[in-house]
Length: 99
Image 1: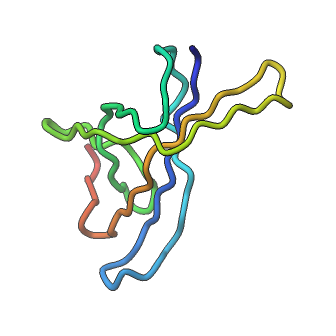
Image 2: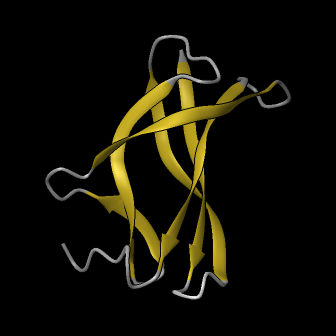
């Protein structure tokens, strides 16, 4: 099946104050059928300034749980979006620099 993978990301400062919340789109993938509770392996997320990016440094792979699957029957063709568990990134702690 064809899926769009998305993840809610909360960007906070060192005092846990919310700076912003974004819906990070991992992209579209063709894969076997998924269900809520399944896990997927992806690069960890990090920050480059205030933008959410993949942290592709060695060893920065993680598993995320599928929390919801949404099928948009209004769109033609129908779109299936997979939502991964939300993450929180702390400015200063999750910065990956200019790799």
